[in-house]
Length: 157
Image (tube, rainbow, N blue to C red):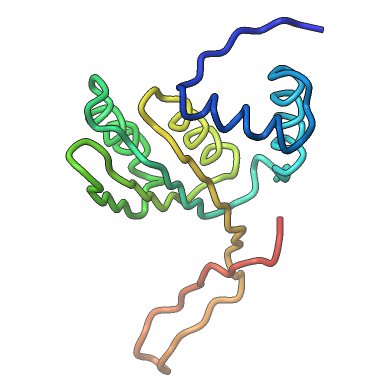
């Protein structure tokens, strides 16, 4: 067994202690192991190269040093994957950010996980929507519109 050290804020520590009481865990270590196992097993494994849209949402503490500049810069560096971004101010320092990204599961997941690990980012969620390009092209009007294809949402990866 490995020993690790983590730092968590007071509110999260209080929630961990409440979870210990409810679950019957005898130590914080036991409770954290249980939560990590549950979190890892709840996360489905998708093929890294599958095409998807990803909805990345989180809260961002804009007062954390240079975070307000790093987050948009990270999306600019992925301009070919960024479809749309919405930022909603909640108070004087915190916003909810929602980004719709397009690409391969591995790329979108890596972006989201790196973002969620940033100090000042909380409540991170990634929702992946599997898509495939329809291979049968069509036109909408005879002779009036160019032949094209559409993305189709798939029921699963």
